[in-house]
Image (spheres, helix red, strand yellow):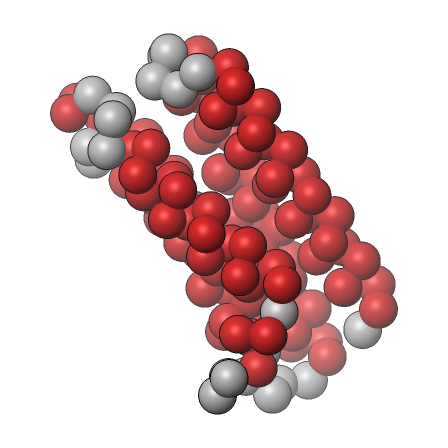
Length: 116
């Protein structure tokens, strides 16, 4: 693999989840196109992009800063999932599965930050 981030398991997982969020939002009502759909997609993409951007051979402190952005964007996705559930755009099962995956990702990133 040509880029360091491609080897990171968290990046691979976030790529999969970002694509899954994109598919889920296609089922949201059209009224949400420029609000919740857009917001959750941007946050999910941001999670993935912050890992890639943070791996550009910068200092450990700089990488740690991007990992903090990762966690913030991950929590934004979770908050959007709560709204989607409350508005009945996603099922309880979809919510729980994605919630658990983002929870695990945030734990992984916290451990990665600690190891720097």
